[in-house]
Image 1 (tube, rainbow over the protein chains, first blue to last red):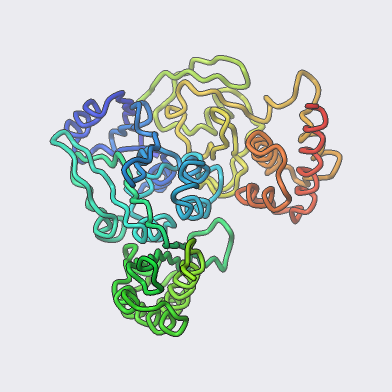
Image 2: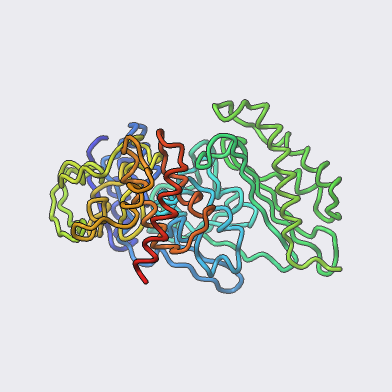
Length: 292
Length: 159
């Protein structure tokens, strides 16, 4: 690994100043599970690391006004095991528990994971399906970016120079809704998915028709993707198993998988259809209050 | 660039000046001579380098020592109480939970942290928790047996 200067700012303002002073020669480091690996492989060789670890207040979890606000420096294990989040957003814990292993989830932060922009990660499909956004903070203010617009290319995100992911905002699902995350893991339990899929469905008040739906997949393109054609085919209609099957077929036009050791592009395309269907079926099965 | 850090390792305070790129596993092994912690895959997958940082297991092979500044660290050398082995250590011996031994410190540190977070785990919870600790010798049955019995023993001695 190259040598570098390790900075430990204690306020966000100090961090912004360091990022501005060192520009492209600086990298932000949170838990380090992504960045340190990249540095060990010499894929990045920053002269300055700006650690967010000593800035207080970035690891809080609060639920208010129908939204969960999760600090970017919360570890994945913290989110996975939070009783407060388990109560209102069970899909989060169900998703984060699939990431790598406990020792990695104790280090990796939710903000760091999203900033890394790896299309094979587990959380993005569920977070996109839940309609989550990230808060990006910089010396000139804050902006909020929905996660379905955040990932721009392979390991590329919409984070501008000088910006830091400070919070994840997840709207609480309405009553009569259900969600699911399914990870296809043919190799080992701690591997990245060959294909992953998440779905969140909400029924019309007192009805059986689908009022709202979001379906998202990971490991099927250079970014996590939202399957809008699948969503369009089921929205407003009754979620019968034949409709779900028909709609899931449409995902094959929306994915563009990379060939790798986890499967060929063609195989992943077929598995995307299978796992989009299973995620939708599981989301429907998880709806808490189905009217009689 | 060098940086001075403070670590409390197995109850002992250390002030160390290390290069910023020093990995925690190297700091423990070479700067402090605590060679019980092993490095194997070097990419945070195999679990051999598992230590407790502020009570939580981490992969020390992808942790920067400077990022652990101020932390309390427990390694395998810190588990025994005076000359008496921790029940998990004794159980790995009694139940043959290792062959070559390279993965064993990590297996024991990971199971120690499971015991701390969930003192009464089911077998499935043990398997789920230990998924990040690989062994290429034993086939895992003896490791599981060692953990099940070690945890039962630790509970018994705590009562």
